[in-house]
Length: 284
Image 1 (cartoon, rainbow, N blue to C red):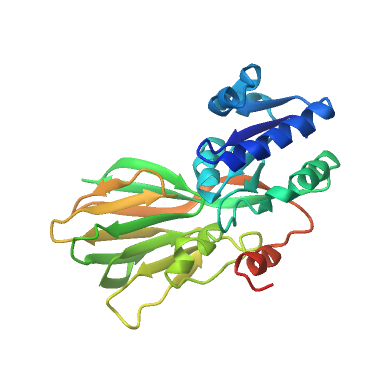
Image 2: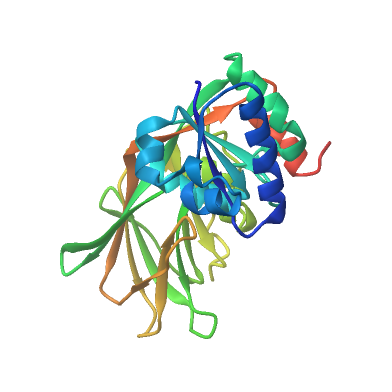
């Protein structure tokens, strides 16, 4: 893979420092590269600026410099494109951006030498139905979250799997996560950790359920989830990957399934999923 494209979190000064180091590495080796146009302007590299359409058409791989939020936001531009993404962490935990800033040069050299692997990560397809029509559709690499406003009462949730009513409960919400998202919000809500490289599944994690016996569930990727939710007329929000929150009204139904589209992520051979879990959970 000869030509990289850089996507940089514009709100983090450290991200620009890392981007400048990457640019210096490319320049010394005579390698061509692109930079997302807003970041290119701030890095005084306007001639290398490109929109996402040009990045997808001309680059071989994408380097995302920021935290997991930056990675999630940027990754949606490349769903199903087969362009592999490398995340450089200038955030906090960094499960998606699992290459630390001091490892940048090593990572670039490994990619240059072909010493890397590409993992295909499953996505969720999320649809909001109203009056039997799809009014909103999105994809999620991490999760789709249904929750209530802080000042509203508990939600009333009905969970169907393959058109069979599986559970009915009250609570603050529900998280539908991929194995990639098992180390995100779902983990904080008591869900299990799932190896995304080995397992394709959907994780269902209730948020503060008012039911002592309700526990997270793991189901197959090809199973179909349908959710009916009510809140006595109060506001309900639905959100894929922490992006724009959409209002859900009583009577709406949410359909979740494994998507046909996948996302490609670059992994270095010395970093297994369990190594990353150990490091990020401060077990080392």
